[in-house]
Every structure is written in structure tokens, then in C-alpha cells.
Length: 327
Image (cartoon, rainbow, N blue to C red; front, side, top):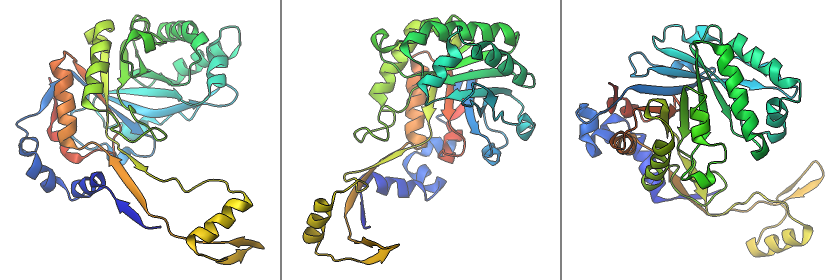
């Protein structure tokens, strides 16, 4: 398949040239003279990607991603803390369930026996960590109260260990079904995942545009105490093609393709005929480099945000670490 790269993709290729390319377009970042300081700098690290945790990074809180919940409501896959034993800051165990509304429901509803056992398992797994972060991204609306009481039980069990909760980006109370203020009343930190303004199946667009981030931060600041608010920033980008070629086809549609593309049977594989043709696809890539991340960090700092979190280590433009520091 031939792919026609869009202008955004050209920019991605330039970024891949290294720090010298960044320095040319954003000299203050390379100098370290235009950095942004925060009281707390959080970062996520995937299990098995410990090599991306470099020495001397200005990170205060490291979130190990992630323990999960299996089909029986049991905690599994706790990342080994020994793999990051040299990290001098606070280490948090992330417990994630991002896709199954039914599983989350059975784990949160106190009428089922799963919930108490899960809280107990998380508290036990947290013993060598400084804190726990709950990242439940598939919470049924009817379980919003159950989620808050679940967090309360977990906080009571954790004692002096910190409890943080990852929350989806919202622009107003109308869309904030879980309630940032309700979460902040229980958790020590609310990490607002200010990304995926556009996602893999949406129309093309920035993962987190500046105007959208400004709105998310303004709403979060209005309902979450500043000492409990952490604004998330993305290190990743997304690509969209203007044509999707993967699909199911009925026989008449295959006949139309053969006529349109002027192709015949390419060969038979396991007794089934196969054709092949070429398609031109235009691809738009939206991503973040050190300059755009610096602009977003300045936006947050100027709005009174004290703490940020990066998703995730290993995906970043290395020059970003010249642009952020700790208070």
C-alpha cells in the first residue's frame, strides 16, 4: 500500500532527527532557560519498560502501570517495585480497569462479595509502595456513589499511604458524572487525564489542543483544591487515515472492486481466491514535542496548577526534560 504522508507526518519525521532539530525551533528549551517548575511532577511507567526511567529526571512521583482485575474480580499482575528500587521519589501502584463496565460494576457494588476482597487485596499489595492510584475508566453511572465509597474504604485501609484517582477530562459539571469534587473529598490527589480530546475512532485532531486544555484546567481548578489537583499531559500522538480499507465484503462488492481496480485473482490461498490492489491513503499525524508540551505546562502553571503528570515514560521527546523542573 502506498501512503501519502500529510504535513503533520513530515513534522514527526523532523522531530525524529534528534535534539538538534528541537533546538533549532525552540532554543530556550535546549538552553534550559525557559523551563516550568511544579511542586509535584508525576510520571507513568509501564511494567517491563523500566529502561525508560532515566537518572536525574525531575520526577517526584512514579506510577507503576499496572495491576489489573481478572474476570473473577481478583487483583493480578502487581508490578514489581524492586525493578525501580533506585528511584528516589514516591512510588505508586496503579490498579487499572479501563474496558469492562460489567466487571467494574461487580467490583464496586457492595452487595456483591467481590468488593471487600478486592479492597483487602489492594491494601495488601500496596504494602511496599508509597501510594495507590485507581484508574477505573469504565464506571457505570449508577455506580458513581459506589465508586466514592469504594475509594473511602480503600483510603481507610491504606492508612498513611497516598490514594490518588485518575479521572477523565471534563469541561463542566454537566459532563462530570463522577464528580471531581466528590473524588477530591476522598482521594489525596485527583489526576485529570487531559488528553484524548480526539481518539482513535474520532475525527482527526490534536490529542489535547490548547484551548481544550485551558477549559479542562479551568473547570478542574474550580472544583478541586489546588493541593489535590494534578493535570495530566500526553507524550503520545495519533495518526488518522482518510480511508479505511479493512472491512467485510459481500461477493457483489468484490466483483465491483475487480472491475474498478482492473485486477484478477492474484492467487488462491488454502482454496480461497485472493485479489490484490493498491490504495492511496492520506495520513494526518497529531503529536506533541517539547515545544508544545512546554506551552501546555505554561498554560497550567499560569492558571494556578501546582502539579502535572506525564503519560507515559518512553514516549516523550527527550527535550521535554529540559523544560520542566521541581519547585
